[in-house]
Image (cartoon, rainbow, N blue to C red):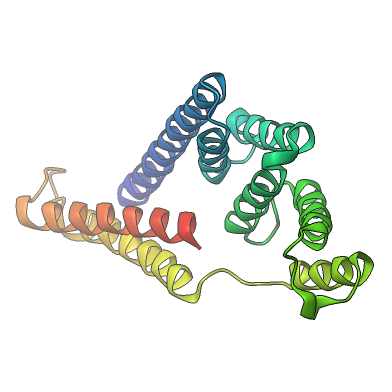
Length: 207
């Protein structure tokens, strides 16, 4: 029972640390985007907001705010609309798993990207001879269900396994019968846990 409580406590602590880190980084990226827009650097603003949206945590305010800013810029700044919509699409597809966060924004981005790409003077002629044909071509291409990078997905999975293995080493070998830490197993377990968390986060963020 004691070991089970220790495992639960470690898992909760690790998840809490990840959540706090995600919120801190997301808010920082959002603020960087806002500062860039104030300084009249829209491309940097878009990059900051996209980063904020990628620091995804369910119900985190910075995520909704980032999408709102990207969509607003896309709708009000024709010069940077395509870049902003593409940022919305990248953020939404990078953070999807069993569900797609901001699926409505992703659908709007796909439609807008298809339209803007078709209207571009250098839009691919092979996609069609007129705007309607090119729009349909780009829309079909964007609608394809492209799964996350296999390598990054594998890294995320390995990260979770390493994370769990590290916790297992700490619980089974890093704590003696008296409840004291055993130095070498504890260090090994902590190392595996940290490497696992980092690998999981990197894999998820870049998938």
